[in-house]
Image (cartoon, rainbow, N blue to C red; front, side, top):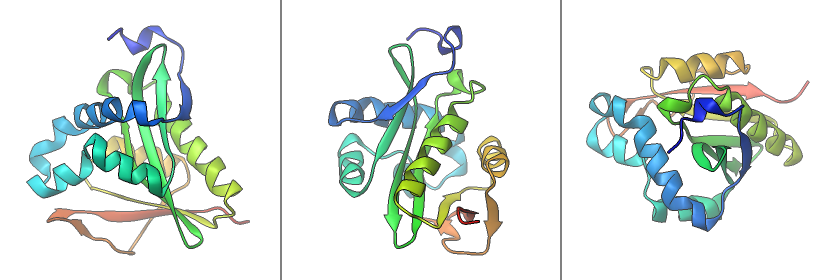
Length: 164
């Protein structure tokens, strides 16, 4: 893979079924540095297989961030009542700092507004500090909403109101 930093910030597009093996690989590569902080079950849930991603794709959109020909980031979402739940956000370590996380969140925000959702929601672990800072800059606030753990790994929920 070419160094993604050689390219200008990437493009965001909807994933296709043909992308799912690459998306699964990039999710694993994005979270492997944190593996010891997850329980085994939580790590497996955080790094889904391409088959599990195909199931997610049937529930809602998956986007990929690309730089050149390289898939370097992803996020998926599912509508739950009037909320849009964000899941599976990941950016490869070599592509961090290119503002791709911000671009992915903007894509999700636009989608949520088109779906007339009132709120964005996500769950994260307290050790993903860089991601938490990104979410806070994007207007997310920590709540006491569930879930509070994923197979024994601590979680907390963050929300962003879209109304007003």
